[in-house]
Amino acid sequence: MFFVTYWINMSMLLLRKKRQKRWLNRRWLVSPINQKRIQKGDYNNLFQEIKNDPDFFYRYTRMTLEHFEKLVELTKPYLIKKSHRALLPELRLLITLRYLATGDRPFAIALAFRVGESTVREVMKEVCFILIKILEPLYLSSPTEED
Image (cartoon, rainbow, N blue to C red; front, side):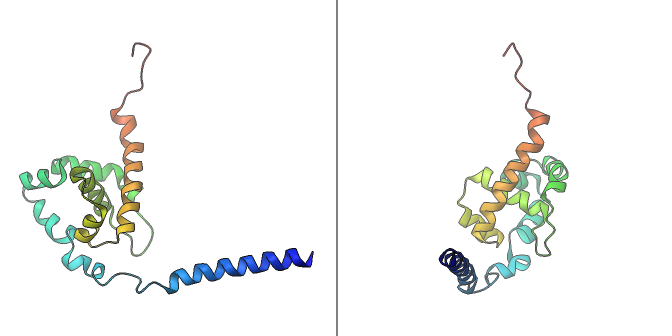
């Protein structure tokens, strides 16, 4: 009995140390490049300018500004995060649309928007799931017996 208790305690201790080590090896909480998101990121600079030019906006997002705003309105309740450092719902949607429109690598999108690559990957997964959840009932009809 003592051996089993000892083994369980040691296993838990090793797991705890492994988790702590993962955080200790991080150089910073947010990369210095990403800390300048507001000043130099695509969303706060380029995208705000592109909104004023319908042709550029369409080329950038593959949709009109009206469609984009409607999509933001539909998805906003699902895209809002409660964290104090959370990305804006419009930015989360834009990251996903940019990936879907260009097929660019997540690393390139992360650099452009000044967010972490893992953040881009997570945002894309979440937003695609939300888009399917919201748009499927509106735009995809269920198959009928005739189909």
